[in-house]
Length: 182
Image (cartoon, rainbow, N blue to C red; front, top):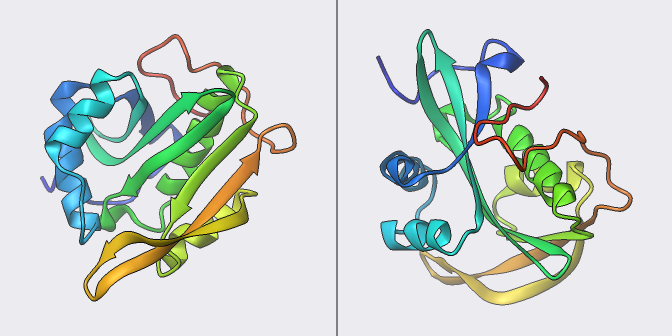
């Protein structure tokens, strides 16, 4: 069976779970498939070690679960910073990114976060559309933020005020395998 293929048939088929050390190899495989300039194993392990909010999206296939995306977010001082949100290319356009982003909003609200921030490549039109569609607004730009094939690429800085943004209010802080939509 191709471990990273196929659309989610039903909403219940996708589960959000806390990322663990044992997930890092699969996370890196997704990261390398999706990005030209991926994070390395040390970065993911450091994120887990320092206690960032790290999640994996797992799709059910019978009794098996495949990792189809992940997200990493830091939380502190009333803000959450989405550091990485990635969906395996074969899972693009199946709503996985939107589900991950909604999940991060719920987690942030459970930590009493007032604002979410992120950077995104302007050339990543699908990601920009996802974030703008979720209510993020452009608040700035970081020059030369991302590595690129021809040097550096700027980043758009986006923010979401959670006081005004709608999100599922499910508490995901306690269980390690919380589901959205249950």
